[in-house]
Image (cartoon, rainbow over all chains, first blue to last red; front, side, top):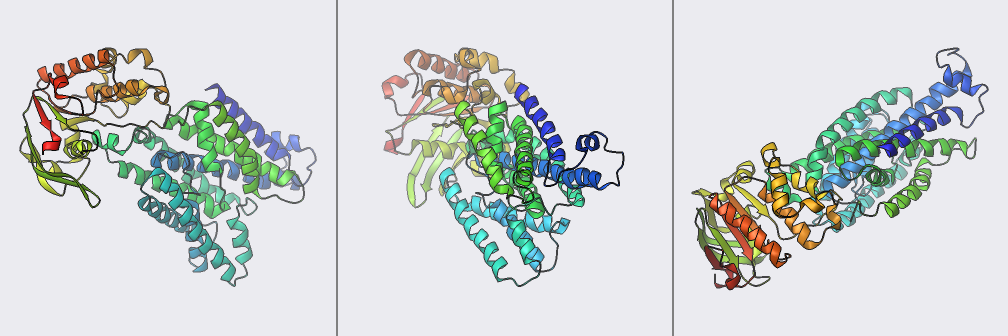
Length: 323
Length: 203
């Protein structure tokens, strides 16, 4: 519990730092931060609260979504290596959005794009799971199917002759640069619903860790638990992917770090992996726009650079969380 | 009564159980024995409802097993599988409690005490020995109140003292009118506490 509070305090401090630091220097920045409702029309206020504030909120919401998605991926497949990128969920979501955008049915950042992404994510995740017959083959099949779907996304982007193709390409690499305040209105409710659903599924994911037969022996259906998890996982990943693109690694790392903090109980892992995911992505986003201003570094690379050492350190210290 | 008639079970293209028949009386302890790899666990999984069979039938109280819903099967039988791999570091008490009803949980302390789990109840299952983990799985089944209990190799990792204590548990279940099926590859002489021994290899 103490470690959770420390992570929560760090998230608060990182949020303040995110408001204070960025590609441009803002005069009296702390005064603006601690007086959010005064002089709201000034450019400094708009930089701090509208531009940086939106990014911070988006990083927290996307990080939390991916953290929970990772917990669902690992819990439902009983596999510590499972995560949306490996299960094909992210690639499926990207393909779904791309098909929707290229057929002129939806625009990036719209609710329609989220629905296209969710359908793609769910289809590819279910396909990967149905083709796999063991924990190891799940990873190999997942990598294979992901590679095919990602290649299809890449080839389509290369072949397409549209003025907005560049922004679509930029989006597939993962970026918060295109996030708008209206995106938060899509992200926040879906995260809330997803987090609640994941928390309700958590005790059944605990049971699933004993194997499918143990679940059946007490009268529950493992495939139903798994499919419900895939739906929530797909919705969370689809929302993130359709708004900020693919951010890999975070969904793998956050649940492992959360288990180190709280132990294996999935109801606690859901909450803590959301917290850890939000913290890592927020720090990565601050670093991406503060390290070499005015340039912005790719968020995905910084997420790995910050998250990986924490993951390795926690796995070394808490070695009996996964056998 | 459990009645198995001309049962054939295949895994892929390979037939593992071929035309097997047996009758298990209610309130009895029945051992199904045979050497390693002869298909005892496959038979156990078929009787447990975990594996679909290609031909023949298994009836429980006159009802064909494959027509009984999963929820009803859970009310009918408790199962202990031969192998269990724990992935997560839940405590022994948490593993025994998972998914169990309130009524079952009321029995947890008594069962843990009788199986000598209490001393490692709060220890992570990933750190337990094979024998300790096997007793945790036995406890998961024993806290449930069902008419039938199916145990696949329940004594294989136990020392003689623990074996005697577990056999006493089986006998107490039998006195309470329960039907017990034990899959084992131990000698017939060591199964004197059973009412019926079915040699699987002769079927």
